[in-house]
Image (cartoon, rainbow, N blue to C red; front, side, top):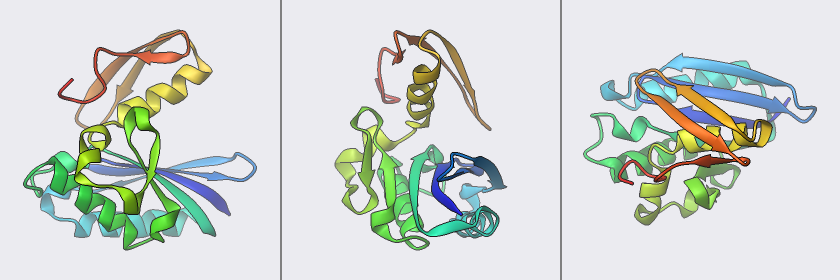
Length: 166
């Protein structure tokens, strides 16, 4: 049984890593053309959960870039609707959304004011984790549609900004 599933909601793919209590990890990826509608996300979540076999009290951690998909009028709508989509599959209190330097926030607490820190912050989650393992280096985060290069120094990501606007 898996105790934690980390999700990255992209505009073209939904990726997940399920981690058991013993630390074993298994990765999954499903096509998710969000520009064609959220039904693709719901199907992908269902497919991954069928393969991941989560424990009944499994926790879920979410990052995203899918809020940029053309199906949403703006980033705020995208973040809010993607977060809401997950609450249709899992108990709201079991879902944490990555807010950049602010860490994780319970899905039910996400508001429009959090959007700038949630939107497209998946690179920072990866960089923070990588910096713990390799305090100094260069991380190349290659996704379906973008590539981020992040300097790691003294155990932390080095960046001029932490949102797309910054």
